[in-house]
Image (cartoon, rainbow, N blue to C red; front, side, top):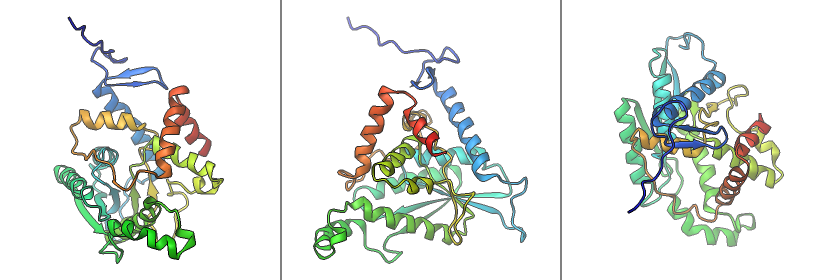
Length: 288
């Protein structure tokens, strides 16, 4: 006879837990995990946005926040949290937007998940493709990369993410201009932030870490400042919350991602966290 699998109870109630926070020692059920994420997200929004009681512009137009979504778990949780926390405000308009890189078998299904989520929340949804920006589809760029490397020494050995990252940043800026956004919210989680800091340390580019979002205190003229409300939320907590809430999300990985430096950093950060719970928080605290 197979023994039943023991499930820890929530540290705050008697419900079964869905996540164990090794860094805090707590087990949380779906309800208390949701409350915990909301509390931390609300705190970051207050610190990063600092909106007045009435954020309307002098002409009476609403303060617009572009929420960059991709169809994945992080941006799904970001949009639902912002809809819950900021959505009720009558002086602020949330607009969701997605960049279509032109990656067959990957972007179409994730784009549909993003659209479904936006429609379920009655949030305006906009898209912008690389082709609309005058760029080639990413699949075509990847096909041409060997030739590009042969003709340009500085491009030799570059990974697809190096190209795509530049295009995506420009695409998000263009999308923000398209909807006349005052600020842009990104779904970077704690793991993303820790990985970026580690990658910059490895390359001796600490100044790049200093330039990581949020940017509301030092905005750049002509570019919507970025905020990252989920930056203190670990990836596994976001994933667990998204599953508990049955949010539409695409689980596939980009076919061009293997071999990227971030994949290596992801493993290193995960190992650090397993050995020393709280290591991700420590990396981000070192930046702040």
